[in-house]
Every structure is written in C-alpha cells, then in structure tokens.
Image 1: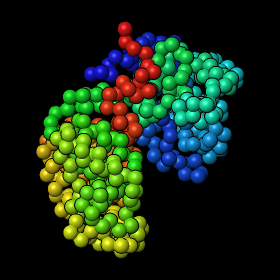
Image 2: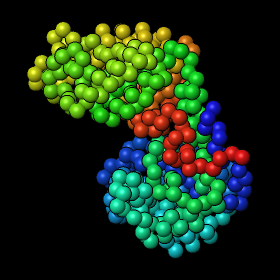
Image 3: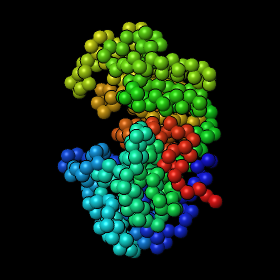
Image 4: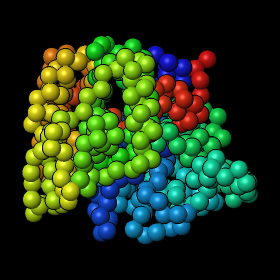
Length: 417
C-alpha cells in the first residue's frame, strides 16, 4: 500500500510533546451558532483521545470554517465547536479567539498535562489561502505577514498532525506550509489513506463506481479518473441528464445543462471505450414542475423525455431495478453523489434504493466505500451507517487523486525512514 510510506502519529513518540492537529471542523451551523451536523467533530475524536492516552503535553486544534475572506466574522467563529468538544470529550476545552500572534503562542506554550486548546478560524487570516491564490496568480509574492503567519503557527507544536483528509487536496498554508520538522497523519487520515489505497490500488472485480450529485460539474474530474479503475460506472444525479441529452438527444426539460460539458461527455465515452468500462445511466425519471414539497410529480422515460417546464428530480423504478442487479454483482463498490433531491421525500426513492442495494451487496461480501457530504447525509437519514464498509470524509476533489501520495496534504508529511 503506497501510503504507508508516510509517518503516522503511531510511528512517533508524543509523550510530553506539544501536538498541533489540523482538523476539519468546516461544519454546518445555523445563524445562532448551533451545530447542525457534528459528524466531522466526532471523526476527529480518536486522534485527540490517542494524544490524551499517550500523555501529550498539550493538544492544539486548528481548523477553518467557511469562507470569511480573511476577516473575522462573529457568525463564523469556532467558539461553539469548543463547547461541543467539551461535551463529547467530557474535558474542558480552552478556546482562544485568535490563531496566531504573541498571546496565542504564550497561552499555548503554557499548556501542560494534556490541556486541549482550540484556536479561532484560520481563515480569519488571508494568509491561510495564500498558497492557493499564489498558484492561480504568478504575480503574487510571499510577504512578511505570510512568513509571520507560518512562523507563529509552527511555534505552537513539536509535532504536526494532519487529520483532515477532506482538505488534503488543498494547499492550505496550515496543511502544507508549516515548518515543524515532524509531520504525521492522524488516525482519521491514516485510516482513510489505508482504506482508499487498499481498495483502489488492487480492487476485487467487478469494481463498480456510482457517481451522482446535484452539481453537474463537481464530479467530472472524478469520473474521468475513475475510468482507469472501474469495470462498470453508473452515472446518476443531474449529470446523468446531461449525458442523456448529448448522447441520445433526449429532452431534459428545465434540468440543468451546460453546453461546455459536451466535450467532456464525448471524452468520457472515448475513455470508457479505451479502458473497456461499461457505462450505465437511468432509463426512467421522476420529474416535477418545481423543486418543492408542494410540487406536481410525474414519471417519464427515455422514449418520452422530460417535457418543457419540468425538471428531473430522481431516477425511476425501472432504473432502480437495473442498478440493483448491477450492484449485487459487485465485489468492490465506490459511491459518491446522490441520485436526486433526496431531502424531499417525494424525490428520495432512487437514493434510498442505491443505499439498500449497496448494503445488500456488502452483506454478500462486497467491499463498499461511500463518500461526499450529501451521500453521507442520506446514509445517516436511512440509518445505514453500519451497512457500508467505509464511510469516507473525503469528497470528489480528494478522490481525484487516485494515488493518495499525490494529495498535497499527504505529500507534505514526513517519510518513513
């Protein structure tokens, strides 16, 4: 497994060391600051608990939340997350309303006996995104504030731990730019890398990919990458309507379409032919006159298409039967992206059937991986978390790197000797 070349937290001695952990607490919160989904916080707990058990001197947690544009915004503070960590861990979590500077360094360096400190939103400082911006603008130069930002964060730990797989495709400064000499993966990142590497490096066949979602552009690169790995690829969600229109000239009503994707569709067909990948799309569709609970709902198929003024919202019953048969033949399953607007019950059957089929195939011995926020949310909705082998915190961007060692956040980690 390729990713074993990198050090993990279990490969180093953390006793009496200051451990700086980059976590992903970019979670949904309402305008009152109430947490709507704490799954990413829960996912970070094993690494934190490992540090406590192995007598780290201090545990400093850093993360970002949303896109405040390099300026403090009260509604994007990580303060509420400190309270949730306190509840989940049963320990006092100190929250510092900044993440860099003399006062932050002084407080963090005074911490001892396994003290846990959560720092404020990294993206309240524009320097967190500077490496990303520099990549897109060659004229941008590294300034003194950027150097101070790196130095201040690096002063907080003896060991840096990346436990944010979902962010490791991004060159955030806190993920790839710190100067701490020992950089390791946390337990969450290590598990993600091990599972993904084991599955994608040498999958049991038939290997079936299922890609959906509501954003027609979000998963395009992932689809193109997966064609080198899978035997069968099922495409559902809104991108399926684009394929059906381009390939079969099927009317798709007011379903989203982008003429810029025509070349992409043709490239996918060509690459699938090259790698002998079978492509499957829905053959019937649930349609509505609007995306709303009080909408009119209908059903149509390839022969009739989607009429003007109507939008595709889910896959139909014949498609569910076809996909079920394919999924039950699988030995390895990778699923990212819902089949339709599943949060409205009228449009949820396709996604629910995918979950049920994957769960049944898993019960029969298939290795199954599910990923993507909407996918994970749907799995939780139908209480199927224990029916799928691995529910990843990753997204389409992380999975575009089929060799995990190409992820910038993994490349930056220390190599095993």
